[in-house]
Length: 430
Image (cartoon, rainbow, N blue to C red):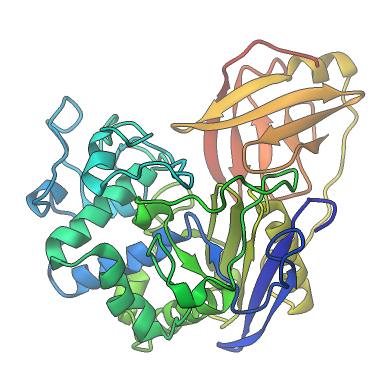
């Protein structure tokens, strides 16, 4: 925590299908109260997992079909027709799995004192919205591209189908049945919770001025919760996947939701592993918060970590591996890789800024006799060569494979799942 400038972290561990323990570390802010199991954190994109379950409940109830034209079910707003939608309509399955060709990777949120747009203003990119209009910008179903914009459309869909405010519907259909008593999508927290809320911090540990941002894009990023509550949510999904009718969804719905669609993504979760090590997971961050949750499908094990630092995901990754080691999981174990010797001249050719997906970015720089990589959601870290064109870091299992030793393009490989990248700036051996 000290090395990564994280003021506070809260953890809940799932073992044998129950919350085995939960505990807080650090403080809500500098000089603030101690973090405990009831301290509230913003969960960022973890919101999408709960939204996906609420949407799948409506599929389960026959209110909407996964593969029909979502425009036929929307009433308050519709995707404008364009060349991409003329031959292929957008479906709920695509929106939930980031394959709908929809733009807007994520949302900045709105600082205290700033005007907050309505949902319709966000959808159309109208003032005071600080994000572009949500539109179809690629052929629906053709490829994976992460889209918070797509989940914002799902938010409007849930409202249109239920005639109920999104935050109220999720309270009724997800939080209450799952026993999640410290969770809400409300952007103004209940007064009785105000004395136990983590405050947001930048990556360098400084407080975010004005406190937490507000996110009218609730489905994509607006959740306030605790690790213990999210652990209860995961346990419900595990139970359904293993054939038991849970409080949230039926077994067939859970199996459908956790199917791989594209690029390691299911509907609402990242999925991976195989056999006993098969898992579903989701990470999230907002301005000043970051966290991660992981659950093994069939073993009744998992962990949820929330931090009050915008790059706290790096710490969360370390904690996931520590829990995996302590509880002998068949996944997320640390393993050993071999490092090769690479000519220093070839190392310099790989330096530059790279892009992947709609808005993913990372920067590779030369630092002495090795490379470092900086991604928007992580601290800068060293890269190690398996060969002149294949490099890895110590923070995850991804390998950065360059198509040649000049670094113009390549792909990120994680458990066989590949995402292409290309250089957007000339080599820079800084």
